[in-house]
Image 1 (cartoon, rainbow, N blue to C red):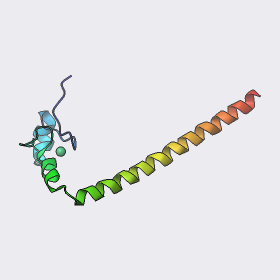
Image 2 (cartoon, helix red, strand yellow; image 1 turned 135 degrees about the horizontal axis):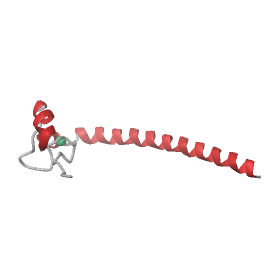
Image 3 (cartoon, protein in one colour; image 1 turned 90 degrees about the vertical axis):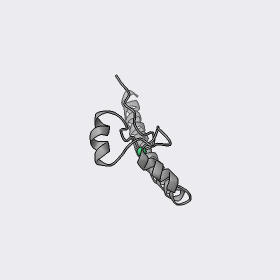
Image 4 (tube, rainbow, N blue to C red; image 1 turned 180 degrees about the vertical axis):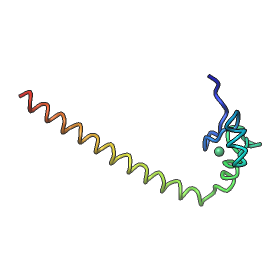
Length: 90
Ligand SMILES: [Zn+2]
């Protein structure tokens, strides 16, 4: 198993078959200043000052809420099952 190099930020391939096909198609290549990320993310990080910070925070809030309510639903279902089983045993 060989770990192909890919962008740490967006996961875009920076090496191998996918890089030679998909990467070239989208103009993605390894950043010249940071070999762990692609040139697209390098450009993004240059722009990233105050504008992207606000967007990131609102994104996190939304996904957190989604996960929480999903987990709560699962937990409720489990509790109901347990109560049901206990009742039969008694
Ligand atoms: Zn990237």
